[in-house]
Image 1 (cartoon, one colour):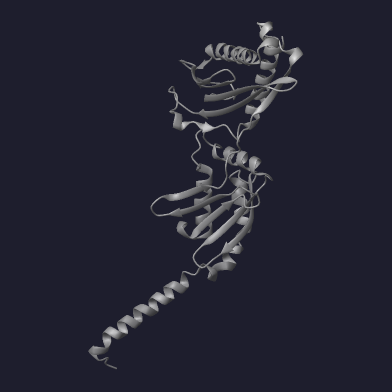
Image 2: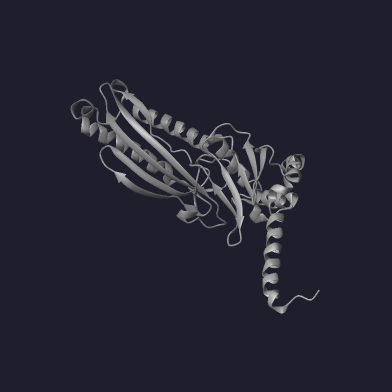
Length: 304
């Protein structure tokens, strides 16, 4: 049957619409839900062979029209421990975090599930409050990793020195002038820390100390170009900030202190300030031990 020429445009448009509808229907991932959901064992095997199963376990698989979502539980139960585990996973193959393991997992699962990268989403740590890692993809940026957590903030701790236990060079000020006593306590601590860090350094650098605040009752300084001061078993560059606040209470003097630390890698050259990473939470234990040691040293200094 011969189709009139004047009907061809209408038929062509109708054909294009039908083809488009078929293509759209075929792109609905929900049509392949059975296939995706049957892949649990394969996903678990991938986690095991990549050494990731010690950090994350498969939780569930969600299939939307245009997105395959795979959720993973953390083996940790708190946000702090989950953050530490995530940092360890980042540096599994390299001292510099480059998300290699997470990116390789994303690419492997896209291949295993037979979907385009832009149709896949991974969520790590969905069982832990205040912690989640989202991994997806777009053409402009490639694989995107979004960290959904905040590193814990450090707080001030205290050293309590009873009046009768305080031992400073000028004993007269101890009873006659509270402001002078506080100033002398601060000076003792300041001199001790300056002498301590003066001999420190790393590689071919001497340590660098910057005094940010030093008045009668407060001391704040930063020390950089250090190594193995806090993280004693690694060859990182270290950057330390120490804050001291002194106050007189009814029965004692209180020395409040806080230490914050950062670390960075460098091949013969110290990292720029922006290249240092917070020691928390990965090296929280190291920081806590360092604070305890400092507290013991200050207590001994003021009571000897």
